[in-house]
Image 1 (cartoon, rainbow, N blue to C red):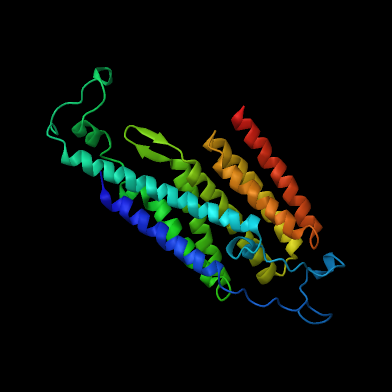
Image 2: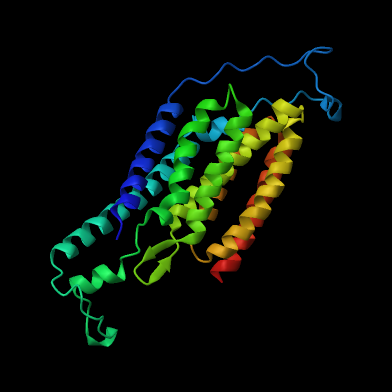
Length: 286
């Protein structure tokens, strides 16, 4: 059993939580003034008569002000802390087994003969917590600790890093956690992956709006369509581990509540996305 993988994972979790917590308590940037006729208008502006909504979707997840979205971010931190705590507990258990393993070289007995001894336990779990197993999650956590600080000054770099974060979280959730001869998927990692999907697509929406001049409603609808289809595919692969869909539905409810008064199209598409994910959730639970 490798100690390096578990220790680096725990360190990456601490860095991610500290960075996102510090970012969450920072004051947000001032709201930019609305564009006036003849100045600051994009080629897309003629698609609607109303001014573009000013809801900062990424700030809903990174700097939550309401209890609902703050609870979502806090639950993502708790899920990561729980996962890191499990790894620390398993690491300590293996260290105790290593200190009490006089029969290290013996052959493994059949399972029907009784519980494994300390030496057998060590050999069953010798591939647990390797650096290669935890590498996707570690990379995702480190990218997630950096990109929120680059979002205002370097939005394209921030988006690429958020995509790397999402890829790491999804890979960790889909690969599962090795426990001896078993590989189990984790609802905690699924919840973190769901949060990562929401915030990454929120950044994607902001990039379309700010860089390409796409109205926020159009950009959000496109992102929600892509995200809901991807979410269904992921949930079907995760099976009965529903933490992923719970995080998605939680966050989508928060988006709908924040946009219902200023961007009805976003709120409506959010409700449709919730329905799509709920269908997939019912499918894997029945």
